[in-house]
Length: 124
Image (cartoon, rainbow, N blue to C red):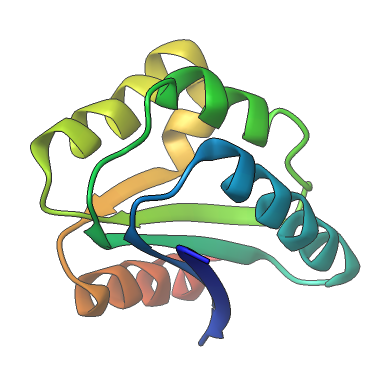
């Protein structure tokens, strides 16, 4: 699989490697949301795209669809990428869904993503 999922401190981290597609992500994502719903605390997500080749076509509609039924205890979505197109795409999600847009933060390293999450949890 081109997408793997694991616990990463206070978040669930998705690691994208090479080529992947939305169907693969949506299947995994539904299972992750079930895990988050079973938790009592706030759980955030890290999307690590540093080893991904490109976002598949249809990113905006796929992401909106995936987060339509987000659990109430979902925290931040921290995206790790240095790709300008991916950064712009995740930034545009806020134009379509303001609530989702407030949760999305783009960082360029895993260390920066973890610091963002540490700051978030310290303030909540």
